[in-house]
Image (cartoon, rainbow, N blue to C red; front, side):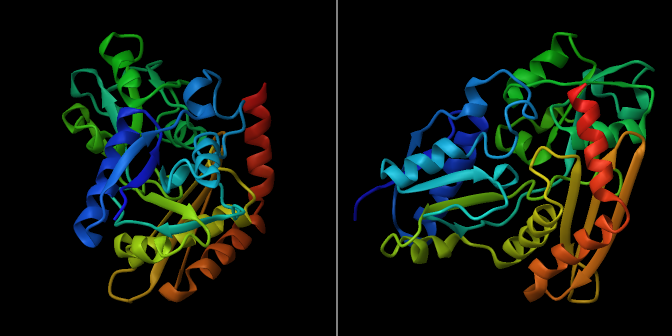
Length: 308
């Protein structure tokens, strides 16, 4: 059988997660995959994600390679995927999700409570920045770009007092020893899809979607479906100040979704539960509940402040 060409961003984290998917495919189907590096707009631009569009900046080039036939499958961090359907592209698999939480990396193992007033904390995420300000209104959030290693270097060099990154990403590049604090979802709600991977292929590719189904995890797919449905109904992109996390509700057999829309010193947070089969509806219903409470105005107000 021909070797599958697996499209991936070229960052160390992206290569690590693509290797993980390639190993899963080989283990469960016997098919081998080779990684083909693809450069995306998000990799070459130094502008903040909110300035270059946010949604899709890490995804479009990989999808173009899929449609052009230069790769057979593409692996993304699922939180980077736009919520709308992509013509000619199928989401063939969501492998078992890794830890979705956010993590603080600070010098000398300091926790958020240990940082001095005025401490500089780096993050490129309006969602993280808003929740950090709610936890510690006396720190300064500094917008940063670059891969995880670049961000970690800013702490080691003293340029920043701390950074906040996805725990799963740090695990994938072997940097968990740098973590000084893990934020529970009750403290900092993750981005919709955080910790999960998306495996895409061309729609209608003979037998490929069926092959990739072998690496799909039903529970993870249901959870991210609820989160992304909420995000879509809010009409918010992946760089919006929106958090969402779905997981089985203890003792009920239902799926619980927690969502938050953030702006300045305000946080609108709601939750709901539904059967796993109703994950998409759960996300829409939770979004409707938050929109009825002013979520749209909160996101607009936050966007205006970011542009100032």
